[in-house]
Length: 488
Image (cartoon, rainbow, N blue to C red; front, side, top):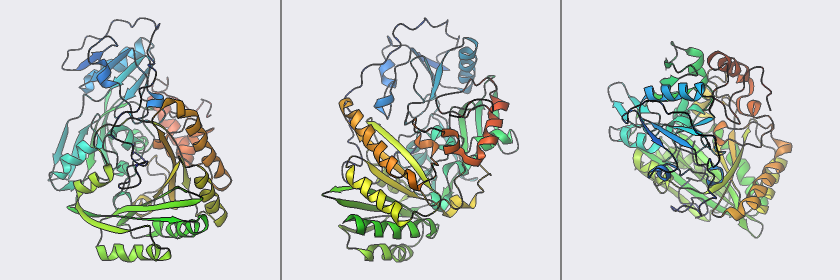
């Protein structure tokens, strides 16, 4: 999943410092029933880790400390065969388990106090420059893939947080700063290898397992099987333009400027992907920060941004830089080290433009909640060129932008206050939005998450679930339900 606050030189509250927040209370599997005998797998296939093992704690860090758990067993798989054996083992022994890659699940769906099948042992990357393809193990991070393709003059459209794992990101859709010019990350997916609920190792593409292939392009992780490898289309890209401009405005002026961004961002040339951040500046004022990336010309970009820049005097002037692809990644990535904070997020898809009342409510709510940032990711462009039913990801043509309501903090004692602040801002927007949400910004509080995440694609998704996992082996609190399961 993409990190919401990787949006370059915003105030320091945007990107948490490259340190770990205070450690959470240890949640271990104390008193749990003894595990059955472990599968007979060599060390070349798997690294088994129990709490008493010396390297156990090396694998514990998770992006959201609030939902971190300590498993009774972590199986760091190095091969698809190991994953297959582990799936057979947990199924045969009726064990609860989770599947972990980058560990950025907002609600901790990759965490368990029982068994974790950890994919970080499968992080090999191969690049075919003749065919513009990259093959990546499911334990690879986005930045590892960016480095590998950039070394060969190629690029992949994906999220800005460097330590996000490719698996959850691509399975849920994958929005990033090249999304309007090249589509979602899942749109680059040509083939994947997946271990299903019967421990079969499947090759999944448009001609082999077409329904499962469709579901893996936006259906989210942890519902159909365990992906072990991805084959993705990449493209030549030597450089990109990165830009940023900020304003500090009254709520009324901020509302006018936001309305102008809303009218422009989803309809701008597809070369340009932009994000608008809305946050309290104190004293009733609002900070707006528009950042983004373009693969077009600088003249085009300046002309497109001019109406926004000329509406109100920026508090920090428009900056445009031409950077290599990998340096553009670094520009938005911030520190490349794995970071851990306490956090909570919610999301909304804006499917029709917000009216004046809705924008005013947004500014009022943002002004009153200094710890909550609203990050608005522009849609349209190439995202909209794919039909809403052509992939499991449903938010295509007509989608204006996605709002993420995000808060992070460093001390467990502050959790209740931050959760309440996020909930209050989100509640302020309920009269104006339909409740559509992004599965990669998972939110355990959603009353009807299947429809919020997948909309009209839900019936086909549940049918694929029935076909490939009829016993619901792959499940978590917000996995795709079986057709007969309650959808709540």
